Image (cartoon, rainbow over all chains, first blue to last red; front, side, top):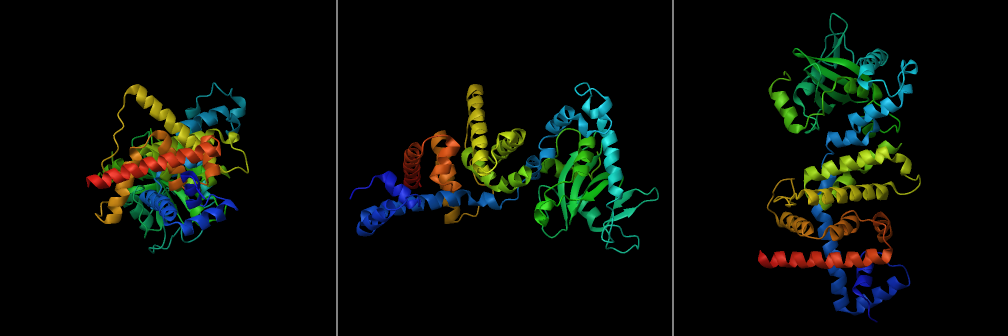
Length: 256
Length: 161
């Protein structure tokens, strides 16, 4: 029986249904020339697959991860979405929708987000008043949160573009702020926050529980909480930094 | 939640984009654009249908738009010398991967996309045909021609080296 190359290809790809599959199988067993054609299709497929398989193991760049999250898919789009849906802003009911300059509403939202944070600051892991090394956060004289210990170290040294597998801290994105500084989003365990360089310290205006909709820890780590996104949105100037810009900022000690 | 599902598909979408664009930056830009389109048009996604197929279609359309606009701008498509960035290890397997990537870059756009869908991602013919919006018979013959072309390019490369 004669089979076209297309049929042999479909057989090699496992695309044939019975009874055709059985017929081809019998023919291939009986005819080494047919077997060679099928092997050729399979070998090419394996080679092509192998040529790109490595991409799956690469860490997904943070800007792309952010792109898959609707709130940061693009900050401009987020702004536009907010401008279209002013109901999300508590004070917006009194303001005409399209006439609102969206930027003007954000500092208030940021402040709102910052107040939410106090409520989630729980657990000795996060807030350590005893002066031991176990905490990630301390408060200064004014009651503002500062990063300490491993968190402070990671914020100063870790790059979002180059995740440190042994660090408990994951850096999300880094960006230059409108008031001339740097901020970086981060997550530790089930918490996520934003840290902004303040002198030689990292001040933490927002700390929140990471979204755990799925209950899956690893997925949760990829989901930046709303409060943090709002805080980023309120501060970011331009785009998130790429790997090279991060590295340069780190060299300068996160000073501009 | 759509965003979580999209995030889970990112590695596959990056691989697809890499196999049709050949530049890491082009590929990631393409996925980024596609994610924005997907989320911007999430109402067009039909629950219960394959999200991966929908995304492949968006990526493919975005890439074709990009190719057309580059042709209009006379941008040159030069495949990267080192298509692979994971480091040069000089092994035979590495050489083989590079040879395949180079051969892929020389295929026509149409052939490259069908190879990327079926051989790189492993989509069944039926799904690949839906992504491309063509009958399954057309998909099959296009795939057969693309494989022929790829095999010829690889043989030529081997003959040279």
